[in-house]
Amino acid sequence: MKEVILIKLGEIVLKGLNRKSFEDRLVKNIKHRLHFVGPCKVKNSQSIITVTPIFDDVDIDDVAQCISKIFGIAAFSRACAAEKDIDKIKETAGIYLADQFRRIKSFKVEAKRSDKKFPFTSPEIAREIGGYLAELYPDVAVDVHNPEAVVTIEIRDDAAYIHSEVLKGAGGIPVGTGGKAAILISGGIDSPVAAYMMSKRGIELTAIHFASPPYTSERAEEKVVSLLKKVSEYSGRITMYTVPFTKLQEEIRDKCHEEYFTIIMRRLMMMIAQIIAQKNDCQALITGESLGQVASQTIGAIACTDDACSMPVFRPLIGMDKEEIIEISRKIDTFDISIQPYEDCCTVFTPKHPRTRPVLKNVVAEQNKIDFEKLIGEAVENVRITEI
Ligand code: ATP
Ligand code: MG
Image 1 (cartoon, rainbow, N blue to C red):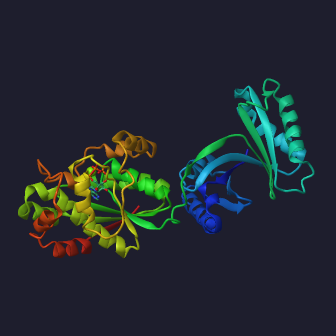
Image 2: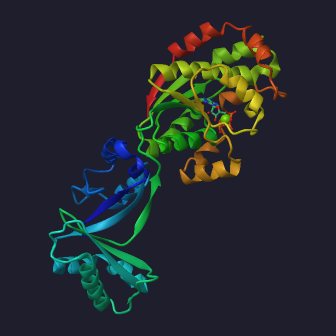
Image 3: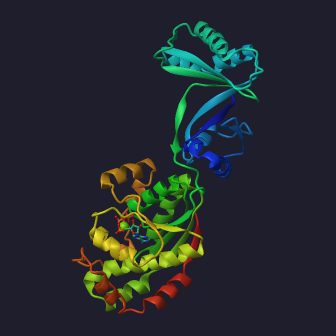
């Protein structure tokens, strides 16, 4: 039996005058994402987006899976369309709900009639269909107060839709309506989660990864690509910039005092990231930092890092515990990739005793021992681009 997907709009409905552009963007995102699943018709009318597979071989499970990861959707249902004739609706509902009605003990029917030309009122439709289903499935009782399943009949302009299960959407707001930002992505647990969280707030992502071959391997970079692929199931496509970071790190190692290694490295990362971000119309940087997690994530260290760039830096994990971050990483399926043991440039040349309370003027003095402007220029010139 041919199924469609009905999408209820999420937070978008609160956006007043912007609503139209939010809806248009959501429809565009849905079309773009479904492109990889199979050809579907996507129609937005009467506050509901209807997704209809064009060919029978499009797998509706795959379509539903894809829809469940698109931000801006609060809830959706799988539904069956019937001709707008009360007997046809009964017959279709009887067949469509058969599997579910074998499992449940009670139900009720609700009806919504947005096509006012349909010759039955909503309560009449509910009564008619409810009576029919009760007779067809005598073991399932009608219970208007506490039913196990609520069958909804929606009489819309193009057809009557029957559905009974409301599935949770990804929430958030449509990607692209919140501007563009660059995520500094490592192979760790935190940064993919940070990327997901900002994408959920409507931000389109660009990714920047620092690699230090031969200290970091090609496998480590492939791991980052795998992580971004997972994130892109939610965020849509991402362009990744891989920055060659070896020379800078070697210079820091050779010329700066060991206890400042990490903080100087992080400052240079921010400077480079800002240049790449600006070139790509990004308005902010995103990191996976969480306060107090490691020595480079104390307030003092973060202040020193922030001083190196003028763009806003979003740190969505700043107040979260590791356990909370891990929970999200499991949900978005990045955890198992993140824990694969490949080295990150941050773990190369790490000092035994990093400064947890760095003094900015001392950090800057240390940093000035290297010709960082020249090295940054070279690094930016040699970035590699990968489309995710
Ligand atoms: P993560 O799990 O995201 O690696 P972490 O807890 O290991 O974070 P750090 O290694 O100190 O913390 O890194 C802090 C943040 O700096 C990361 O969340 C990420 O945004 C950025 N970062 C670290 N390493 C890299 C890298 N190789 N390339 C790009 N960004 C990086
Ligand atoms: Mg890390």
